Length: 366
Image 1 (spheres, rainbow, N blue to C red):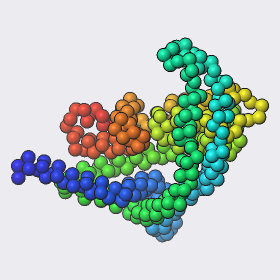
Image 2: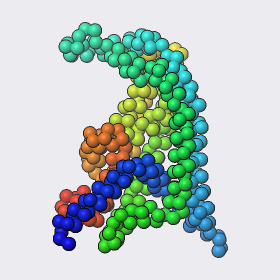
Image 3: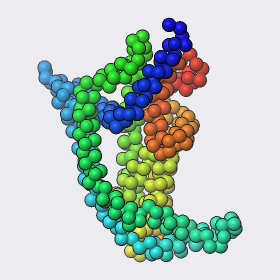
């Protein structure tokens, strides 16, 4: 068989696999989520299976069940703590008077509006930032949208329960038989590439474990810092402070863009739900921005370099360019999966295309 025929067959097989993955995308997503959870739980799983007292050691099935239980206990505990507070937040949003919100933020923005009008006269004398904010707020949180959200809760809960059961089942076996997912991937390649794929998967597992653990720690740090800042500096109620901090922590997972979205909604929710007694709106806005900005500076200069660069062994500029490409191709979802996907591509490129100079440069730190 000539080389051209091999390439054609290889491309055809890749297209068939891609079509099957697209057609059964829900199942593929469940498998990927389970693989990620198994990577996150791998350190605990390894510690449990390493315990040995005389001739007794914890069976892998028991260790996998304990690991899965610990992960879901943490997730459920966070949900049970946040859900009532988030419900109160949405209820408050549904009763907001949009006009009062515009009046509330108009005075602090007066000087800024005048500056923008003087700088950009073409905007017109009637330009107001608060009008833009109110319009966007109305689009997002209209009565119909909030009602639609609560109307779809039953369907959402049903789908979530099914997904949790499926993911739990798959994750249990990925934890118990840690080579299962690797064997599924190896089966897609010819036998002569088996050793290359094994080495690549070993590197991918090591890097992604560090990355996901780092992301989890980063989120916790963001939530703690913002909670303390919003409670002690901005003077918010602790319940509101922790809900807004959790929101910013979750959105912070979206690189570069997420923190600013979280800060915007944090300020907006605070102004519409709770303004501490005796505090001027302008001063409150400054305190809120100071809290979010301080946390973002700590994240940019301390947390992110340790996580994004060191965990996946890539240069910060390299990561930034990858995120820009992912954002232009697939938006926010692309940014979320960009770094893990790029890590996998780099590792496999090192194994199969190491003779290219560009690949050598991009993978020399792995």
